[in-house]
Length: 235
Image 1 (tube, helix red, strand yellow):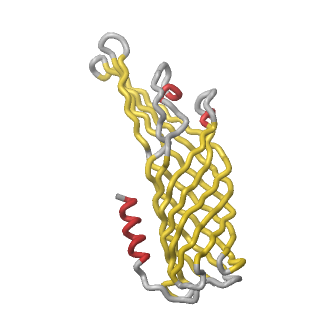
Image 2 (spheres, helix red, strand yellow; image 1 turned 180 degrees about the horizontal axis):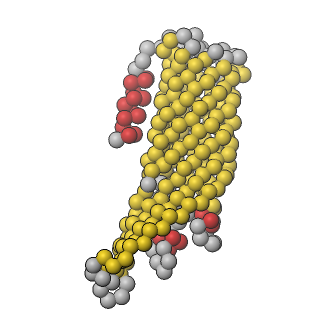
Image 3 (cartoon, rainbow, N blue to C red; image 1 turned 60 degrees about the horizontal axis):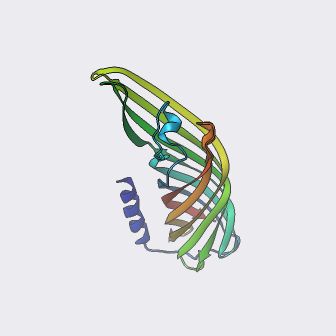
């Protein structure tokens, strides 16, 4: 639902009339982006890495759809090329996994395991603008920098025999920093003098060390997609 709302807002943005004189060398652009993000691929964790004496080998998701936001400052070295800095974050929702495991006799366990991730980034950012003299324009954003990520695993196990006889809650949380990068595609329009609004999609990659949760697990390359509405000012 959240992603559909941002997509609808993006279509509205793209239908706005465009005014203004485009981008010239020396222009400075400051903007904020707000939107939604979603993980691609699975984590480096399995059930057996989190639950004692479990033999489940299915890879766990590392999060669910979340909230994306950033602030960016760029200066146009050339009309079509701008570089600068950016800071932002992506707070992902809980991905839920359920598992039933028989024990001995009439006893069994039912476990709900939830995972999520917060990713914060500091980046050197830039963009290539196609037809920069136009007031409505397509651009390609990109960036490289440092990601600071925090993975959280929430485990709830209920033991039955056949009635509920015990309940165990446990939360694990680990942090890691890594190289990160993104590339995307955007469209923006100057809705009035020096003010622009647009829609921007990105693919971003980073890394997390799952050995922090269980010895022997490797570092894992993770990635996510984001869709944001971008509002900015040119001076």
